[in-house]
Structure formats: structure tokens, C-alpha cells
Image 1 (cartoon, rainbow, N blue to C red):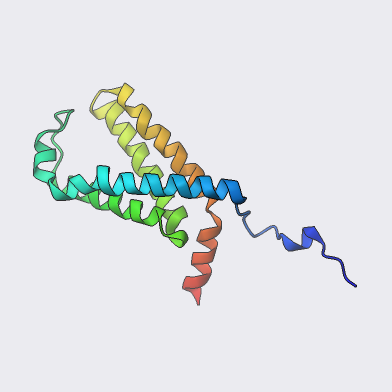
Image 2 (tube, rainbow, N blue to C red):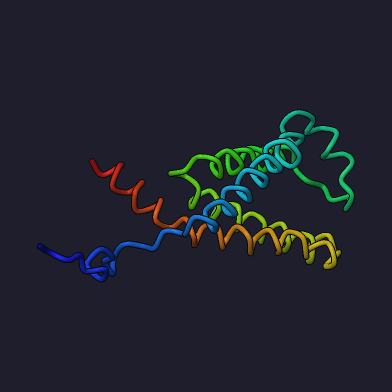
Length: 145
């Protein structure tokens, strides 16, 4: 009769996967934030970009192409948050995007108080990316076949 060694089941190279409750919390956040970025953030930039570029609250001159690009990135990130193998990469990308949005609010629009929400989102996305890092290894192995 052999006994299972708990240390042998975990290798130093394999990232840890979240527990059951943490996994549910992560999926809830991923779905809510994914829907937010698809419906409320990126979607309007793709559906009515001319109106948005003319009526920005900061009265910034945002080029039309940049506005559409940001909308595409937000919608793709929102979809990626809900695809298990793409979650970590989408969360990392959205974290970078929201840090850049905070920088835009703080330095270009000269409204640093408006940068708090994107920074909170960036921290949440960084946590999701960290917790879902095992998915990147799974994706890498799948693509290397």
C-alpha cells in the first residue's frame, strides 16, 4: 500500500489554483466586469463613437480612430474575461488599459479625483490575472502542441 505524498502533488513550477469560494468570487467579478466592459464601456464607443467624441466630459480632442480602438479593446477584454483560457491575459490587458485611463484622467484631463475608479479596477484586474495565472500555462501548452 502506498501513501500519497501531498508535497509530490504540487510542483514548484505549477501555479496554484484558487479554492472553491475564491473561484466563485473570481467568476462573479469576471462576469460582472466583463458585461460592464462589453455593454457600458466599450459598446457605446463602437455604436455611437461620433457622439461620444464630440461630447466628452473632459472636452478632450479624442481622435475618432483612438476612440474606436479603445472600444474594441474594452469589448475584447470583456469577452476575454468570460473565456476561461483567456481570463488571465484579458485581465492583465484590462489592468494596463485602466491604469492608462487613470493617467489620462489625472494628467491630461486634469481631474485626478476621477482617476480613483480606474485605479481600483486596475487593482481588481491585477488580482484576477494573478489568481488565474495557471490559465496562461494551460494556454501555452495548448498552443505549443
